[in-house]
Image (tube, rainbow, N blue to C red):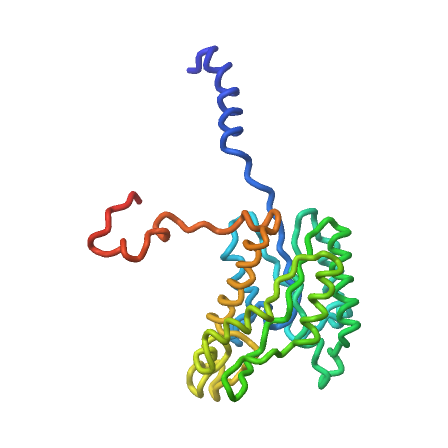
Length: 272
């Protein structure tokens, strides 16, 4: 049975506890818009993986990744199919929109999706201004590279005009820019001509039941490639200290934080 003193002290103690522990930060959404290099994949296309798929694992539970990217879409078709307006309508103050197009915009061989650099630029500006009108945070991302080495083993630039347009809009409208084109090319160069195949959907006949005749794809990623591209994106979230986002990175559990050298027979026991 509680004493009168305890009844009076307990509410004050509870308030002090809440003050010291702090309230859980409000959840924010991180929308991804773009093409097949980011998009969610169905099991029938596995091991093809968009870099948006592993992205949520890098953030804590207060960041909800909402991947709206779609295979085969350019900035023009993403707008024409009314994929953008529902995002605008749902945006809350503090939410983020990561914007990466270019692969399909530049595809002149496909008139149904092709978008000139000038129109591409206008569409990016629309995404930026309408995100800001809802007090959201736009982030522009240059199109991730395709795997293309020359005879000397140098990774080639594959999106020059569209990366330049993305960079120009970011500069003019003072939008955070993640130069994934440049960073992904540097990553492929580090891996080299042969090892870089591990990052893409490169399969020999019989390697996987979804692709009985194999697949030689230099655009879409393997699980490893998607994770590596997501890591590049996250590295810039942290380096640029993007507000409300950079401080919400996932933390390892105590068990996972133990260095590999400490997991052998000489490791000290840990509390479960």
